[in-house]
Amino acid sequence: MTESIVIDAHADTLLKLYFASLMRFSSQENDPLHITKEYLEEGNVNVQVFAMFVPPKLEKIGLEVTLEMIALAKDLAKEKNFTIIKSSKELGYISHKKESTTGMVLSIEGAIALERNLKILPLVHELGVRNIGITWSRPNLFGEGVNFNEKKTGHGLSKDGIQLLEEMENLGMVIDVAHLNYEGYMDVMQFTDAPFIDSHSNAHSICPVSRNLTDDQLEMIGSADGVVGVNFYPKFLSITPEKASINDVIKHIKYIAELIGVKHVGLGSDFDGIATTPIGLEDARKMKELVPLLEKEGFSSKETSKIMGGNFERVFRKIWK
Figure 1 (cartoon, rainbow, N blue to C red):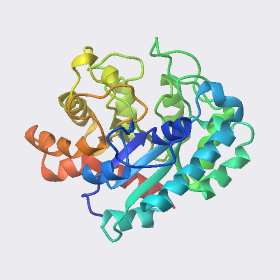
Figure 2: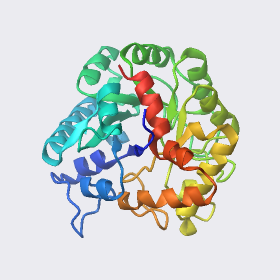
Figure 3: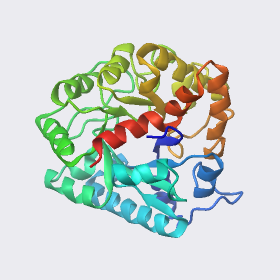
Figure 4: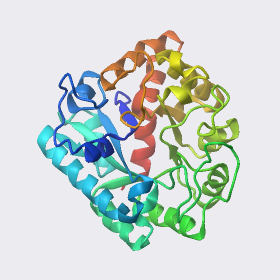
């Protein structure tokens, strides 16, 4: 396995396009997107995970919204030469540069679309979804999301949530615990043996907001051979978010790497889902700027490659069938 791949484990671009009815994917000067195909190429990003999040006001039609975003993703793939990655083998083609394309991974953020009937899961898998975040920051049928005001609150996974984990393991889908509450983390540790990820969260010890991860949560991910994707949202990066910069992203990466190991940290920008961005990471074009800063901090070239994408590649290829 090569470690030269760059993977961003979370962006909300599809929802932004869905709301704006933007049936384009260009890098025009007035384009509000943080991510476009051109931006990804300029930033040297090989694989982008595109989340499909159903906002609270659309929950009643969650499945329909999710299916529309899948259709939108497929249109974008055709128009802009993305490859929707559905297997470890396909990821390997991009990793080894055997295809001159950018990889697209489809992920569901908050399993609202599956609430009506879990038998829908094999269908969304067949349509290309490979990662699923169990909750957003509110309760659903499967579990409870992290409260924005308190760190430890409520119940964890429900019986349906435990069944969801089992079905995902059977299909070869990545479990994403971003937005899941503390008790839910404990349940995932208990009820699955598979590596899991937190696609877009930071270190609570550096920035003590409820969405960030305590040291013991980070250690759970490390012990499961999972990966944490560091989030670029200024309010999750620094207690002075107005001053947050690319250097704060490096601080979170370094802290997590020192706590649980370099092999358990990666990138999860949350681009197009965040209202503001850190100085120096205004959009996907700037992703490449992380490399020299990581090396300046003392990470070797091999370690930097793991952080930039090799770690997520390891987990994805282990789980996807």
